[in-house]
Length: 119
Image (cartoon, rainbow, N blue to C red; front, side):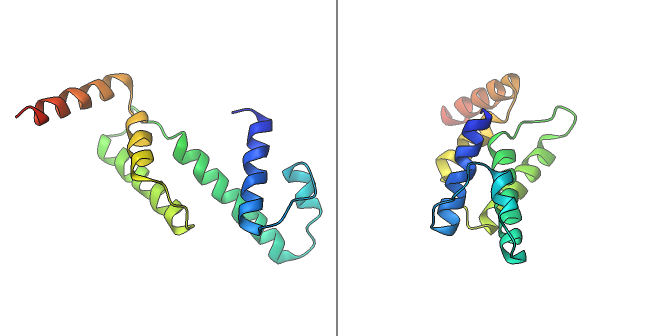
């Protein structure tokens, strides 16, 4: 995702969170316009939310950890987003989790799933 696309996502998030149009083009000039500490906290919250979403959608298995820890990390990211009232469809959750697996792990999962479904 390029910088322009990230700015569009950020801009969309501001619109959905505030319900109003943002008068500036990017995050930095928007932050400079903030004088009220509550607005600064809101901006930080939005940035944290976007950071969590990015981590969630780009989540990948680290070969140095066990699959159980990978699942715990995934569950924590999902719970953190849910705590921010971010609803992710079950189908998207499944896709993101399966996409986080390496090619070999994915193939093993599909093979195991097909064996179970044929019994």
